[in-house]
Image 1: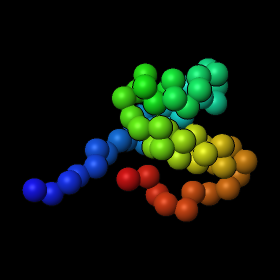
Image 2: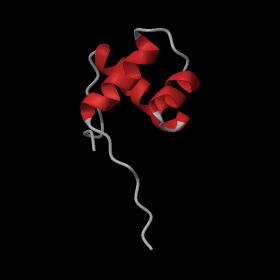
Image 3: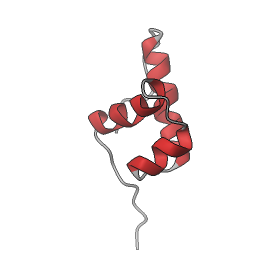
Image 4: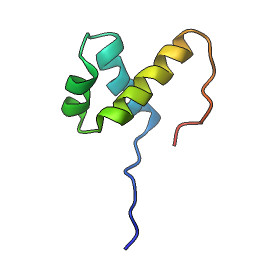
Length: 62
């Protein structure tokens, strides 16, 4: 049986990361609210913050 990761749209990732960057949620609170792992949420938040500073993402959204 193959282990597959869930895939999330770019819009979902942006909305999730904005809970932290714009609405003041902690990473743990936002991850719980959106039903994703803390590590995924942390990655999305870091990516959003870098993009806001003008750094292009290394990996395209999957």
